[in-house]
Length: 230
Length: 230
Image (cartoon, rainbow over all chains, first blue to last red; front, top):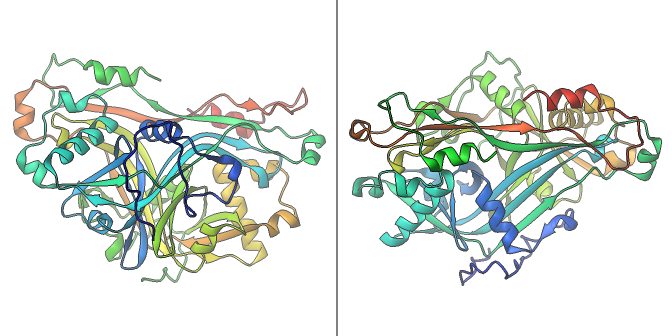
């Protein structure tokens, strides 16, 4: 198993350096080596899927995350099985955005337009209080931008109940598919069937206030901005 | 490692029977035992995340899928590493829909509204030609409903290039979170901060025809219906 890369690097002009397992063999034309594309995808998506090993079998779970430079932060309860299985063991994290459904003339060529990142590495349990705070800030503001400076910060008791993991992004692979279906010349020449793409996007709706809010507390700017950004 | 359940059961009145690893220990109030909720979630989501073991480390990848009764079908190239690692080995599959971002008064209580299913089992390589066809039909019509009967069916050569895997849904866990933030009584009483939910949904856009379509091929009903369903 490859260890995670030594140096953190948040210079997005440095291309990704794929290892054997982070080099896509299927559809190599979809692979991207641009760190900026990795960051953009990680910053846009809402959740990741974390795979860990439990009793010798892979287990995959959806979870939130945050990014700071070249480090991905994950968190969970200190009592969590999956977090315990992730700390100091090899893990894999995938972040995927579906951008479209590709309707081809042949069912074999139907596909999806997507952007995906897969990260391999060993997750490190964060113990330094400052890094714990930075990790939680990254996770909170990734999920709910603007919340870290708006909401009440974690108490000592809440911090003690939270485990934060750090995963270096050094061993990451990005794949992107865009554009129309790639049908065969014969299927295109037949000319009878429709083919194309139905775009897919994530939409944010109108904020719904908590029923226990007192009257007169307006939707703050950082929340309203997100809902109107679509 | 637990084998997958013996009998396929597509009667959605039969509740899920969680095993130790499919029983959530965190937030048990979010667990659902209703098979209909599992099916509804699997049918609505577009992609899954498949975790397999490669050289002793977990690897997670996004991929399409289809459901027929109590079986989840996956497919890929016969040359695919991840498919080879999935067949006859323990795998885990997660399907997740994000329904909202939960803005709490305390950052510790920020959360997501979501529906997620995690399936554990051993994926079986499908070799029977009829089941291969059924599996591909399920995968195609899951991704692009109506396409199996509209598009050209796979040729013998295309079928030979495609591996289909079947995963029994017997060992599945469903978790669902809904509703407003669960802030502490103290934070609610403070009454100064906004709290609530920003709904999130997947939206389909206007179909974009393939540039190589001849004039006069209209968007068919099964495609138009999807785009207008949001």
